[in-house]
Length: 402
Image 1 (cartoon, rainbow, N blue to C red):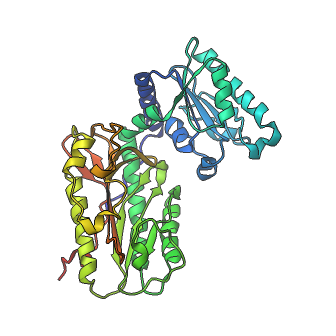
Image 2 (cartoon, one colour):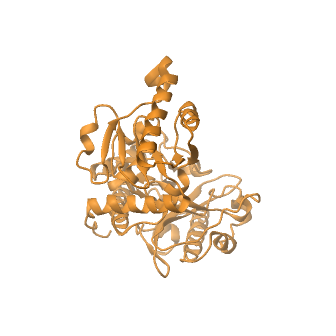
Image 3 (cartoon, one colour):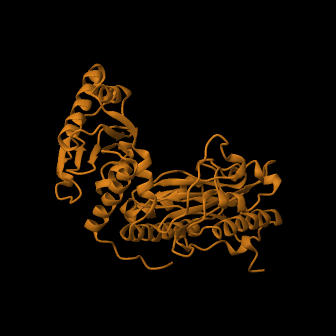
């Protein structure tokens, strides 16, 4: 494993992201955004607070105008947490538009929320009406529209801003990756016959949190025939000798940056079966082929057309995409298989330097048996890519040691 890179300058990190966000707002012609997704609040301001809790509670949000003060509406009692944040100009107590918080007062609360945002627009964006919103109660959106504002989707400028990483963000991503690769080593070292999937996943989770990671977003660790089809969550199953153990990290790590790679291991000291080697070889071929297509200037569609062809018996259980963006979480863009293109839409774009991307593979036979999950995270450079997820592959399953 490589050494952990030094931490970036926190002020440069926060102000650099805010600058990128405002540049995309200008490109899309948005006067302001109201962001409620805690990952986007953190992207815009660097402010972190109770991230998983706020994924389901609209109790914290930020108002970002094209020009003027950034206003954080903080969860009640937490206003002190961001007083010295250089990316935040004002801190107000949030108006929580949810039935859990307000019950029969919800309609009145939605009206108050809309008036608070309208007042900020009139003060800091005079004459402007175009405002991007994220998830909020439909009544609140309606009341804001009733006040003469054009409601837009905040995702477009936010996702485009997040897709290109600043130098400080790249440093954060590399620090997160180092943390998660150390946790993956602890997981691999703990694989033994008789351990449960839950106990194995707990080892990984413990190391992530101990090294300042935020949280693990999914429970994607499975073993034996439970590896196929993919997307079966970690459970109480006991892992046996000779079985495959497949794991997708999906970690929101230090600084709030995702480290996302997948590995499949062989439990015990026995040699892998020919079938296990075939599955692993195919997954490895797919990853290597598709990663080689990642170059700045290449379009998403060009990558789709040149992608590795999955053999027919494994096609039905393919992973749902080939390549995706990564940053604070899974991000824009998605690059999918030819069969998965929506003929009614043109989801295309261009690979750009300083994108961070993940190439995915799942190989599992449509009639069952085990499956292999592999994934690599890369940084797009001026000429190609840099592999970020340098955690070793399984040499036994690759067949290189025999």
